Length: 350
Ligand SMILES: [Zn+2]
Ligand SMILES: [Zn+2]
Image 1 (tube, protein in one colour):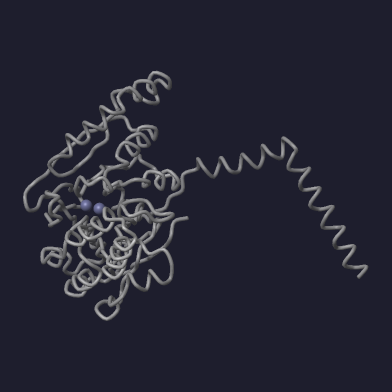
Image 2 (spheres, helix red, strand yellow):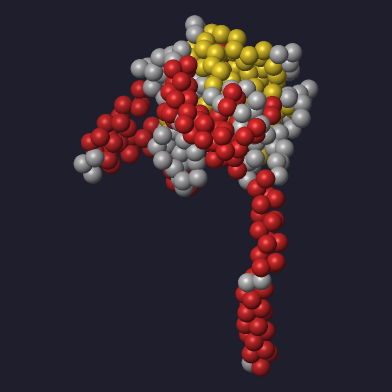
């Protein structure tokens, strides 16, 4: 009993001491310095000589905690690309302290808001990151007028900031340099070891909408963008290492539709009904992965993103029976494919 009393007194003295130490300004400064160093020191999140994809946004417009809307950060050797940049994704890129010095372009699959909302934020961050020319954006027809709209909306902001900060934010580097593509397929980027091909998919009434095949040395991936289940997805995915596909979980969406109707929310139930006709469902996506014989299927653009064990079980209902080598992505999922090997590494960026 006496020992317990001494331990209690010791703990109280220790807690009071820590409290008073934390009031000391030089100790506060030292602790804050560590926080700031962590904020500003760039980490290298990618392997060298590899094709890597970091999921910077894993959800569709339906809200979900700790997830941004669609975004994939791709590193192919020394070239970096951001494929789509939905709401919240720029915050992830900033938190990961992404180095924009090797950013080749932002590539857009289509012009739905959950794929473009953070375009300005990426433009601004990469401008602050030292970009000396307007941000290169590659996208389908309509991208130029979309970018022009962003540019106009933030024109005054750019002038204020450029005038305030001077040479580090040159006004001539503000804005976008857009290249549009069209047709059934188009080679949209190529250098000595990397090529990116856009191919048209079906996301009607959104037209055009594109998927992408990215090849780096002997590694390759396909990214679906938004699409219904299509033969062309299987054709382009044949033999690739990893297929990233948007996926709508019918067991979850149909339950949400039913419940929202019961609750009298006709607008939500109508939207939940409508979206079922322009995304591949989880079963169809597993079938594409199986037919294309990909090594790994990564579900992204999750409709809706599972929020707990039960909803994850419902999201994956029936998938295992078709294709078992899959991964349900979250914000921070990092898939790395080192060149000259068959290895696939899956990590999570903090
Ligand atoms: Zn979408
Ligand atoms: Zn869409």
